[in-house]
Amino acid sequence: MKNDLKEKLLKKLKADKRVLIIIAVGVLGMALIFLSELKPAAKDVQNKTVSETLSYEESIELRLKTLIESIEGAGEAQVMVVFDSSKEEVFAKDTDEDVENNDKDSSQKTKSKYIIIENDDGENGLLTKSVYPHVCGVAIVCDGAGDSVIKQRIIETVCALFDINSTNISVVRKAG
Image 1 (cartoon, rainbow, N blue to C red):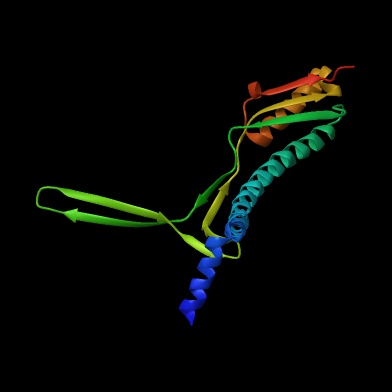
Image 2: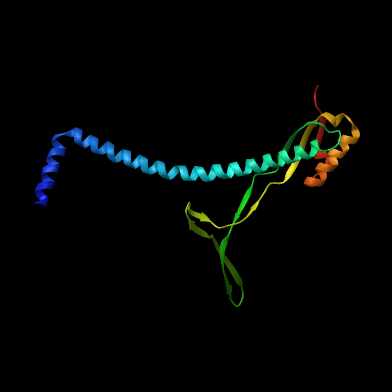
C-alpha cells in the first residue's frame, strides 16, 4: 500500500512539473526563513556593543560639557573627546598546563580555551571584565576661552579628570 502511494506521487510529480516547482519554491522559502532567523541575533549583539560604546563616549562628553559650563566665566561650551580605542571585553579562559621533565630538558605546554555559557541569548563567552577606552585628547569651544585665567582653569580641570597632558587639550573661544 505504501509503495503504491509512493509510485502514484512520483508519477504525478514527473507528469506535472508545476507541482515540482511549487514544492521546490516552498522548501527554498522555508530555508530562507530559517536562515534569516539566525543572522539578526549576531547583528543585535554587535549593535548592542556599538550602542553601549557610543553611549559611554557621549556620556563622558555630556558630563564634561556640564562641568565646564559650571566653571565661572566659561559660558556655553561645546566639547569633543577623543578616545584611544573602543571598549574591550575580556572573557574567561580555561588553561591547562602540561610540564614534562626529562633528564636533560624540561618543557611546558599550555592549552587554553574560552569558557562558554548558555543563556536565553544562546551561547556566549563568560565575560570577566569590560575595559573602557582612555581619553587621549579633548577639544573645547566656549565663550570664556578668551580670558587666559578661565582657559587655564578649564585646562587644569580636564588634566585632573582624564590624567592627560595639557598639550592634548585645546580650549578656544567661540566665534561670534
